[in-house]
Image: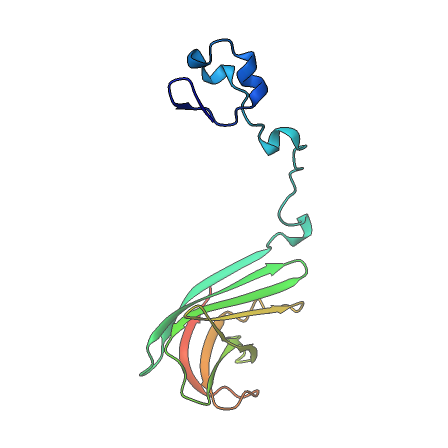
Length: 165
């Protein structure tokens, strides 16, 4: 609303203007200010983002490096909780050969035991994998990403490898 000498008073009501004797001399304190929503809303209680039982008990992470003629890089992590473990992989790789996929594997280097953590998915130009388990795999610190023509229990061509520490 324009008043006096062309000054714009925002949030101004007709009643406020009538109450101000000399509108051309109105100051910001003379004009009713809009009420902020948080001034009338009760405060939101502060809540911890994770329950106490979800606090990490173990954190391992490491870089993944290309193997052989493959090019690419990646990052792997394991976070242990009282309820189990979460294994995460993020990799920057070229698209696999047509008909193939990238698959993640965790290896226990002391025993040679290994298991698949699933197929990586392309998300926003990165291949990603999140594997969760109630089991304990803290000894499985060697990560392998393979290019697979058949998704089964046999790893095929190694593309990226790395150790989480």
